[in-house]
Length: 114
Image 1: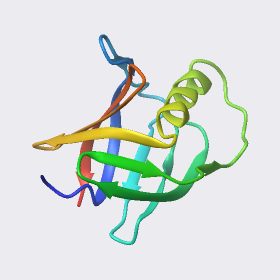
Image 2: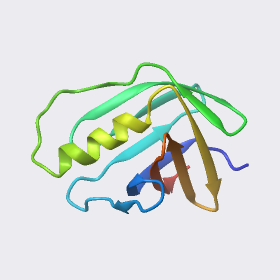
Image 3: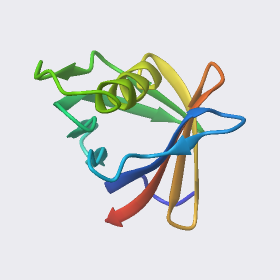
Image 4: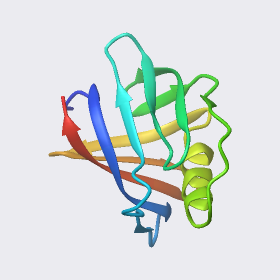
């Protein structure tokens, strides 16, 4: 499996069966480093935390974020991102696409760098 290390930009989010396009005016990103640290932006607030990979599973530690209030639909998109990045989730990388799924929800990212 290709490395998850690097930066990723959200392209789709929501129901795993029919995710919706990410907002173009609220870019959500994740950056995974080789030391198990995650940083990024949910589309409104900065976020960060730790992660550990075992096979096709990612276990996230506590994800913290700033607390800026943004208008809808930015807050809803960010809520979905934070909801999925909880506890242990499944992931796959195909070419330059990262898909993270949990409890019927999905986040789909395109590799930006790494």
